[in-house]
Every structure is written in C-alpha cells, then in structure tokens.
Length: 210
Figure 1: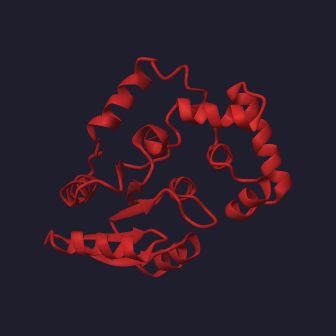
Figure 2: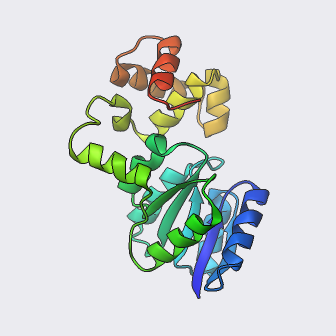
C-alpha cells in the first residue's frame, strides 16, 4: 500500500481526496493536516511515502513547506495541488522539489495516477507543465520577470493584484505591515512597475489572476 498524507486547510477537499484515493485499492491515507503546525506534528509520529500538498496554507505556503522538506532531506515525495493554473505555480513547485503538480479541478483518475507515479520515483507532468518546462529550457520564459520572485514576493504580488491592502496582506501572511512594504518594493523593482495598478495589470497580462 502507498501511504499518503493529505495537507489542505479545507476539510471538504481532504474528504474528497481521501474518498478518491480509497477507491484506488493500493493507496492508504494515513494522516491529514490543515496547516503547517499540524503537519509537523503529524510527521513526527507518522511516516508516509507521498504527500498531497496544497499551495495555499495558513501561515506558511505549500512552497515553503516544500523548501523545508528539501532542507531536511526528507524522502517524502510531494504532489502539489492548487486552484491556481499551472503557469502560475507549476514550475515554481517543481523547482522547489515537488514531483508533480495538479490543479484541484483534475479528475480523480489523474490524482491516483500522480500518486502512483511519484511513489514509484517518477515525476508526474501534465501536458501543460511539460510545455512550460520546454519553454523554460528553450528560454521562452525569459520575458517573465515574476519567475524570479521569491515565494513571499509572489504571494505579495498576487494579493496586491487582488486589491488587498497592506494590513490585510500582513495578516494573511502572518507578517508585519513593514515587512510587507519591503516585499512590495522588491516586487515593484523586479517587475519594472511603479504602482499597485501596474502590478494588477501585470498579473492580468500574465494570467496570474483571473
């Protein structure tokens, strides 16, 4: 049996994933977590082979969890799940150590296939992700400055583009408003824009937000 841990802050999403994987027959969900703190506690007492990890978690993002697992040289193989399109977080997740990336709208068979693939030591790439990787290799993503943003900078960009105030962003990311201001300044510089309106326009142009 492939032992899997589910990490998502929405209980209904975890329930759906659990039911999908239970039907596979060769996969067992051995634990669930809704945030980084509960995940760390779970991993102290439960081993697993595969983790289905949401990009958006309270307090600490899925990308940061990936970076933490990589720093610990954890053997856990991670499939990222997200409501965001592949071209927003897919390459970022793979660069940080994920072995697969799926949109939450993926059909159940894809999720099962992804778990089996990464458990066997193979990366799971959808056609969209494979296309993005090809563009990255051939240099076609060179004109996408947001690919160079850190995880916190990317989160700040997306929240500003969605019209959130600095105080709201600070609360959402568990940071001080001053720190968020620093991230905003870095984002403006790296993207070559000068205002929140231009940030929003950039995000829309590159399909980072709907």
